[in-house]
Length: 499
Image (tube, rainbow, N blue to C red):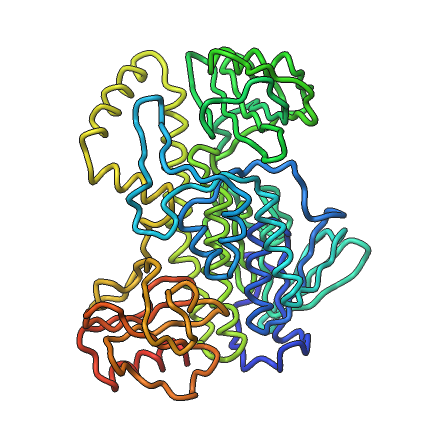
């Protein structure tokens, strides 16, 4: 643990929402998708939030992420944002890997049986609006220069000499995280691909598919639409290993694209071009005392599979309700330790799966023949295909459960059809809105929780005849379940998880 870092202290009930007291405030650093979702969740739960961003303006169209997978869409649905993003994006229910291995999302056990192709800035705009409406205090041009913490809170040092005090700090400030540096956490790993070229271009010829990608020989290229007429090109050539600051010309982009895709689609009028390297890195701990890391500040990986933004959004969805519960006195601070135990293994898995995809894409020599054999084998291995789809879309992950817990504990819950919901909702992800837990019981009649958990719990019944009682966490995972559960069992579960 870093020398300036104290251990987490017990936190009592939070003051009334909006009081802004440093004993209840959370500072979120970084206004990308991860930071915006987290800040919005906290503010919606009545936690005072300050969002620090070193850029003068938060939203940029120079984004690298272009896809929302099913699990991220479910999280956005629980915040009332998925439908509006579906209206501006383009769904893709089937896509191919390496030209032969097709992933069909049409049978996903989700409301969202596709990947939604849209630029990251559209996601940021929706999340920023929600955060502003919830009362987040935005501070642009505020760069973190350091921080210190003790048993009672964290002091964040900001450019210009300002010091801000909060109960907790979350660094969602990207790969070059100032928060991560301030707490002294290493970021072990390595560069997986160097000299990747990015360009935003117009095309004279529209590609035949929504997402276009291929690797041939030493070249790889990927095309995705922005939605405004421009296309993002991501390309790489094994023999072109130059520093990130080396200028990029449109001729280079055209040449690599032709090698990989067979044509350059008449690229012209580039509005932006750049070069970067793709790393595979993960911090050993997502928490140091009262400071947490999320999104790219905690883990970075290759763009293969389009899992970066999606993983960060799920980090935020996991952490936000836990911070709110602790700050409002509904949970012991030990709950915050589960952020590490639940999300760190997912980050590690994403590093492995995205790394495997990019290495298979770039295979050559004997590895190229091995790839062909592997792809043929995958075509006949249903369980393996389902596992791959579950990892890429995010719906296949589950969290650790206590020994002896019901088999459903820790699993993700799909969008159940509900009856008699106390929040007057017809499906689960509507009932989750507002950061609530949802208790799903056998009907009719169900369980009457009274007013003890007013505003924090919705009670509903299965539309089917299922006898399992399930308590769903605000992030859509099972907190507790029981077969033919009686009132005392349910009351104990509610007391344990809602305080």
